[in-house]
Image (cartoon, rainbow, N blue to C red):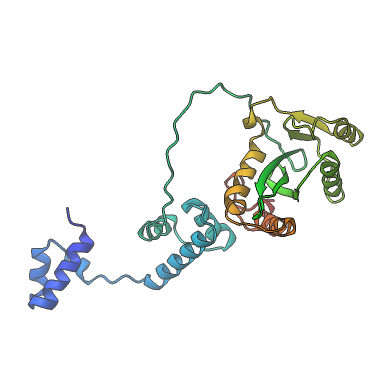
Length: 271
């Protein structure tokens, strides 16, 4: 089955090269005369959409169509129809190929408690990576679960309990004290210093069950975004470079990066 666009092109070639009338060419290739004479009116705008999509996918290689469209619609304020943007996205072959994963039968985890207001539940966790010279470093990430707002990304070769407490104290200088902090059972979080600090600020520590990271799903999803957005795509020479990049990216994450949990809007664009 030949597409109408190809039949139209064949009819145009017959008229141009073989001096056949338009009516005869349309009848021969089963194309209506209105289709033959139709000229697209939005070529310039389509070119702009294609240029925007190429720029976004080159800058954010981990973004698929949904993330690109939400960025153009909610951050840049473009009113282009999603079907039209998706058609151009496919024509440019920008589709991300996702390797299907084998489905495993797992026990149903405990339901994740969803906050109903800001500063109700904070989640925190650690990540690991290496510098260009092979030295290992860690990232300490903190988010507000309500709007998935990133609160802090602290980089360091060693992040003991005292560093964790220092970061949280800095957050409390400009944020309301959370009711609950959700974390795993790492040694930094179960230490006497940390539990005493939480008790002093009247904060309840909610530990997840060992081996159940889905119970801390909000920060685990944020860690995945950090990993694929910039941590695995860049090679840093010093810890200062990591911290500077993390600070700039955190501003972008909160102000410009669309988040599906917020209806396709960045965390700080949600009232």
